[in-house]
Length: 167
Image 1 (cartoon, one colour):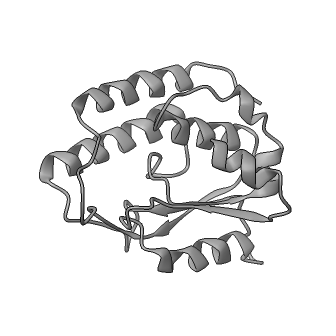
Image 2 (cartoon, helix red, strand yellow):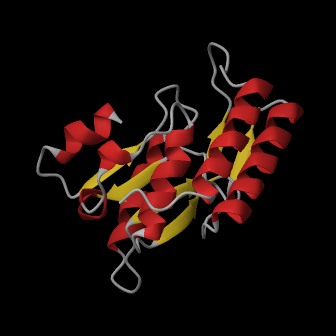
């Protein structure tokens, strides 16, 4: 959230967000930007997706794969989003689309902010496109996500599904 505000106060055209633990390979960033710039069908958000043809999850334990798939499928269905990977943070945003939103009105804590941002952009008419990426389990350290986070995500999804657009 703070990073987005920092970038919006500068003269960037695009913001690429990715996990710093290298679970998101930096080599996909140019493809995300190119997708936004595609003259035939430009978009406002290019989502690095684990769940489209060519995308994958590598090295995650089975329970984390299931949790991720179930939550993302549920979020796509409940929120009416045109993307299958709602919780992934590897994205390229068109700054003009972000500037149309009142980001201070987005209130979801933690990872729920990622879904809330997609919902706000989609409801504002932004075009979202998925780009296949390979997501790898981090090499060092442990994930902080567990089943309590999954239940928290379900609560966030329900809240977002039934609220008016935070424009």
